[in-house]
Image (cartoon, rainbow, N blue to C red; front, side, top):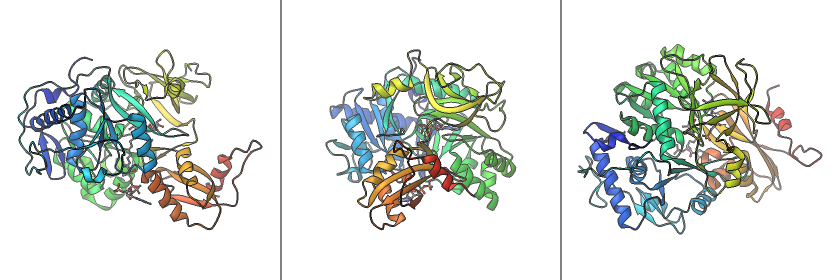
Length: 499
Ligand code: MCA
Ligand code: AMP
C-alpha cells in the first residue's frame, strides 16, 4: 500500500463526486476544497498528523470536511453532534483534538471546552454560501498516501466503562475498501447511496471514503426515509449501504408503495451490515424486489472481514467467506483454533490481516486483551463455518453488548447514566430481541421515589447519544442477584421472554 488514499481525487474530473440533497460537488471541486482546508489549518498552526475533531452535523460541508481532513494528513476524530456531555467530555479528554472544525461554529459553542473551533466552509471567501458550489482550482498537490500511520480515531463502546478510541490507519482503510470492492464488483461506474451517520465505519469508511477511493461517488441522505433512498437508487447505477433496521423499514414501505420496491429493484447491489439481518427480512426484500441483500460482517476495529460475493453469493443466513487477504478463524475458549467446517460447531471469530486496527488510543491494556502478539484480533462474536468457508454469526460472547439499530451500545454505559439520576438506586440494562431494531435496550430500575419511565428514557437520551436511551424501562422492587451480589441478567431476560 503506497499509492494515494483517494486516487480519484488526484486525477480530478468534473464528474459528480458527492451529492447531499440538492447540492453536489464534482471531484475537481472536492479536490480544491481539500486543498483549501489543508491550507487553512496549516496556516492556523495545525501540524500534519495532529488530531482534528470534525463535527458531523448533517450537511454537505460535514461530509467534505471529513474527506478533506483525511486527504490533508490530519488524524480525524469524527464527533456526533448528538453525543451527550459525558461522551463528548470523554472524547475531548482522550483524543485531545487540537482543533475542531464545524460547518456551524455556533452549534459547537460551549459543548467542547478548551478545544478551539474553526469554521469549515466550502467557499474560498469565508462565510459565503456557495449556490451553486464555488469553483475551486486545484493546484495538483497530492494528498494522503495509503500509509500505516493513523488516519482515524473512531469511538466504540465496550461492555463497561467509557467508549474506546479505535485507531485506524490509511492502509487499513485502503486495503479493506479494495478487497470489498473486488467482492462486490464495485467500480467507478457505481454510485453509493446511503443514509448512515458519518461517525462510524459503515457510513464514513465504506460510504464516504470508500466511494471516493473507488471513484464512483456518493449520494448521502442525512436523514433516512425509504422514499428518499428509493428515489436516489433509481437515478443511476447504484449500490445501497444500509443497516438491517433500514431494510426492515424499506420492506414495510416497499409492500405499501410500489415506487419504493421499484427503487430497490433498480439498485445494482443492496449491501447490508453492522448487525445481522434476520433471514425473514432477506426473504421479504427478495419477494418484494427480486433482489438478494448482500451481507458483510465487520467491526470498528477490523473494518470488514467477510462478505457475500456479488458473483457467487453464499447461502442466505451467512455473512460470506473471508475477504481476500483477510484471515478468519474460529477459536475455542482457550483461543485454540477449531479446524471445523461443519456449520454446527460454535467458536469465537478471530481475524488477522491488513484490515486490523493499530490499537485503542491510550488503552494498551484493552488492546492487549483483544489483539495477540501474532496479530490475531478476537472479535467476541460467536459463529459457525460452512464447508465453503462462509461464516454464520450466531451470537456474541458478551451479553452486555447491545446492537440497537446497528449502533453498538455497552449496557454498563447506560447503567452508569441511569445511576446519575437522583431517583435511581439500582439499574440493570440488557438487550432484548426486537424485529425492527435487532435488539432493543431494556432497563430494569429500582427507584428511590416514584419516577416516570419516560423521564428516565429522556434522562439517558440527554446524558448520552439518544440512540443509547432505553426503549423500555421496568420499575422493579429489587434486582435478582446471586450469592456474590452480581445481578443475574439471565433471570431478567426470562422475565421479558413471551410466555
Ligand atoms: C428520539 N430522539 C430523541 C429521543 N427519542 N432525542 C432526545 N430524547 C429522546 N428521548 C431523536 C433521535 O435523536 C433521532 O433524531 C430521532 O429522535 C429518532 O430517533 P431513533 O428512534 O433513535 O432513531 P431511529 O429512527 O429509530 O433510527 C433508526 C436508524 C438508526 C435510522 C436505523 O438507528 C441508524 O442510523 N443506524 C445506523 C447505525 C450505524 O451506522 N452503525 C454502523 C456502526 P434524528 O432523527 O434527528 O437523528 S459501524 C459497524 O457496525 C461495523 C463496522 C459494520 O459492520 O458496519
Ligand atoms: P461495531 O463495533 O459497532 O463496529 O460493531 C461490530 C459488531 O457488529 C460485530 O462485533 C458484530 O457483533 C456486529 N455485526 C456487524 N456486522 C454484522 C453482520 N453482518 N452480522 C452479524 N453481526 C454483525
